[in-house]
Image 1: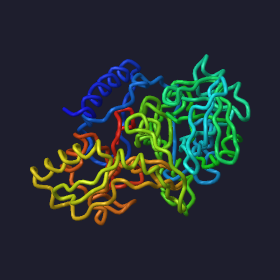
Image 2: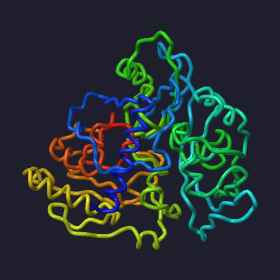
Image 3: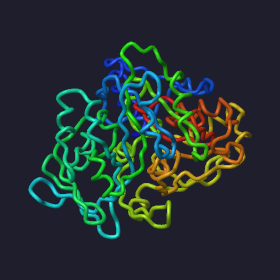
Image 4: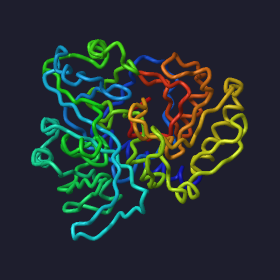
Length: 406
């Protein structure tokens, strides 16, 4: 058992116990078959958030690539929905950080910066939090922010620290919250502060339903889908009931960037061409490696997942389904596109996702991926994009048990 697998097993057991204690349940959406019935055995959630705190009675809705204009305002018009709040989320680029004493902590060398997964919220967001944590968000003022607890540990920063961003923007940290109460975003700021940081895409909405309502996820998907404009790029809606997912965020099936940083290391980068980023070559040299594997040929991935892919592909060859893989997409792909259906930062940026047979599984179409291949990939820790509401049938992404079941 290698170090990654050993860490995965330990973290997976801790998270399983934590989820059991809070009575969380995992619900599959969309009725897309049973290929994912085998849970991954090598998918570590971070140790710093092993027992997520649930957001009481909060429902979640999101649309791949971002909510269409006006969608958030219409959420509360759906029958049985009583209140809602919409939030933005995007990548903002941190240029430096200072601790409470004003001493430098993060100091990237220009043009390098640190990509941060940030959510911008309205004051109504606080009504979806329990006391006393609610008060911290209620007291949030423009120019201030709240770090998730895992981010505070990663940054070694706390209240009184200052984050500096591209465009000479500053955020004063006033406190921290459990990861689950922030949707595992790294930083929570008022919406107007987020706009100054470039966090402008409406990604998700939280809502309440009537206390006596008997609605289910499947009941709500059709009326939410009716709110989508005809020109929506990824015409699909994802809905979660309370307890369906540990982290209320858009793209909740994808390992959040915060946890990717914890597990595979944080990198510095800067935007290059539209939709692409240039990652610090020292990080690439330390973490990215090429290898030649049966069926897959030569692939370039994060070195820590190559043994997992090797094990999976040998199993796929052994059960006779490898002939279904006729081509292979990229594993390490440093991109950051605001309309990416997997989110603005994805496992591909860390080299921990891969596309198998993409020519036969184009995005948005009914997947043709054999069930046996999905099972083998699950066993080594990869979730499958084919169960997304907007299916990505070729995509396998390294994931955690804390992510929504895919």
